[in-house]
Amino acid sequence: MKIEETTNYFANALVLVTGSLPYLEDDFFARKLGIKIEIFTDEYLRFRSRKEDADVAQYYLVEKLITRIDEILEVFELINYLGITKKIIPPLLARRSLLVLKLELLKVKNNLIISLKKKESSVTSIISKPTNKDQMLVKNTAVAPKNIQKNLELNPNKEKILNFIKKSPNTRTKDIIHEFNALSDRTVKRNLGELLKVGLINRKIENKAAYYSAEN
Image (cartoon, rainbow, N blue to C red; front, side, top):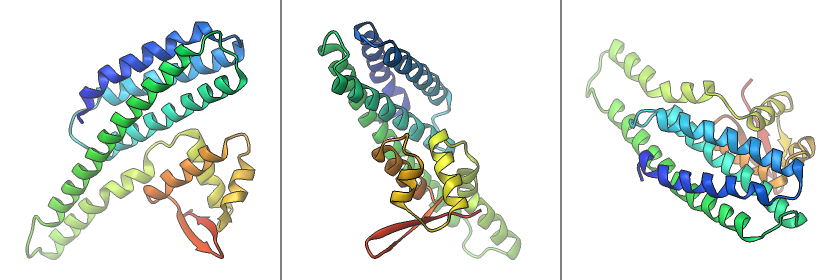
C-alpha cells in the first residue's frame, strides 16, 4: 500500500464522518467531533505532502494519524452509548469508513518499517573493512534514525505520559492509568505500547505487574 493510495479512503471517511454531524443531538459532542475532524484533516494533509521515500518522520505521521482515528472512534462509541444521534446509520457508516482507512494506514506503516530496516541494513554493509574514520561515519549514520525518533514531536497524551514516567521511574501501569484518569484505560495502554515500540520507555515485569521507566 502506497501513501497516495490512501487518498480515496481518507476522502470517503472524511465525507461520512462530517456527514454524521447534523444527526447529533448534543452540541458538546458535535463540537468535540468537529475539532477532532479538523485536526485529523490537517495531519493527513501534512502526511500526504511528504515525499514517497520512507523516513522516520513519515512513520511518526502515520502513527499520529492512526491515533487520531482511534480518538474519533472513541467519540463515536460514546455517542452510540449515550444514544444522542437522530439516526443510527450515518455514525455506523462513518465508523466503518474510519476502520477501513485505519487498516490501509497500518499497511503503509508496515511498508515503512520494512523500508527503514532495509535502509539500516544497507548502511551497515556499505564498507567491508572500514578505517576508524569510516567506522565512526557508519556508526553515526546507523544510529541517526534512533536520535531522530527521540526528537520528533509526540502527541500531547504521549508526551504527558512520557514526562510522568521520567519523573516517576519504575511506575506501574495502574498508577499511570490513575494519573491520567481523564483518558480511557485503552488509550493509556495504547500510548504506552507505542512509546515502548519506538524505544522511548522501557518495561519490566515483576510478579505479573508491569513497571515502566525512561531515560531523563
